[in-house]
Image (cartoon, rainbow, N blue to C red):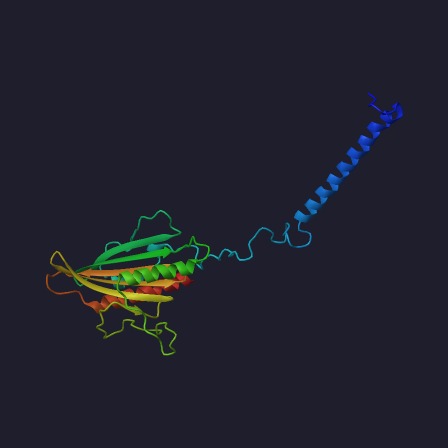
Length: 260
């Protein structure tokens, strides 16, 4: 079709002009697209392409390494037979009864019973491995928090500063010793990274019961030793020192078992 005022020669040239214009536009769009892609590729280091940490905030925290201990000892076999016989001189079963737990990598325990000088004795041990699910809190810090919570619940006084004034307990602070008559709840040294002792005397069924508990932490593992004795009579209270020495010695033995 020839437009008004347009020659047939001009009409023949018109489509070619439109084709050239369309090709020029396509080329321009192609160049612009290449420039946009180049800007997004981060070739100048500002955008963060693959392999250079792109997309990761510079202030984000890296996952903390796991705690020192990733498993727990078998509880009923963790005490030497000689130790069991010393703590429970007369027992019908030194094999112990394992506590019912659903994850033996996180918590295990065992219980024994027997007699000593006519009184009934019971020994219970418990191992708990703390795992933190907070990326900013380590497993060991989580165990510290749990230990502090237990100490507070048991009304254990804060540790006294050592001679250097660092605030940590002295190496053997409050540890039971022969001739000692201290039954107060207190921090003790010489076992694990931190520990406390709780000595309680109660009266159940008109028979005095003394319960000595030692809780200590080694890295990300908390261990509880509970040694109790119920008097055979109705008035005489079980002595404190034998139970404290027995529980403390066993705690030291278990600490060595974990750190091997």
